Length: 119
Figure 1 (cartoon, rainbow, N blue to C red):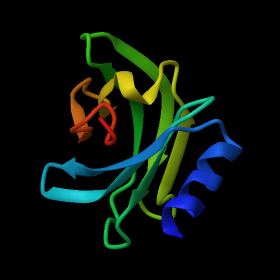
Figure 2: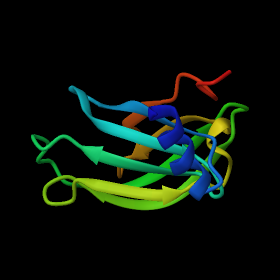
Figure 3: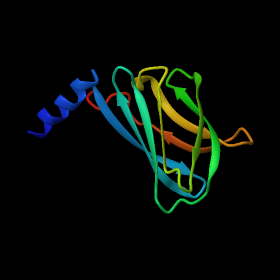
Figure 4: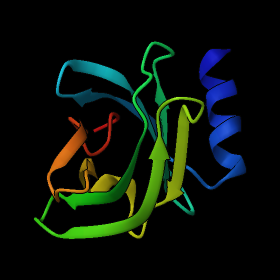
């Protein structure tokens, strides 16, 4: 029953799978990144409610073949506990999602462990 429901949801967006990865900051886990492999593929970030620091970040995807692709800007923290965006590549090509601080260094990072959980 659960598998059929999951397939029905995925078929709505021509999707193949969902993944989740912990979003890590300098003091440990600060949230979760959810990824969707579909048409289009996308990511959604949720911060833990205890995270109060605000910041403007340049969001960057690091692909499995070593490319760095910009997803634009995000404001996270305080009252802004979520952010999402469409990926310029399939989710299966994404190795990391990075939130770059004003100093150009990654402040928050999520690493996707597998390209496809069904492989």
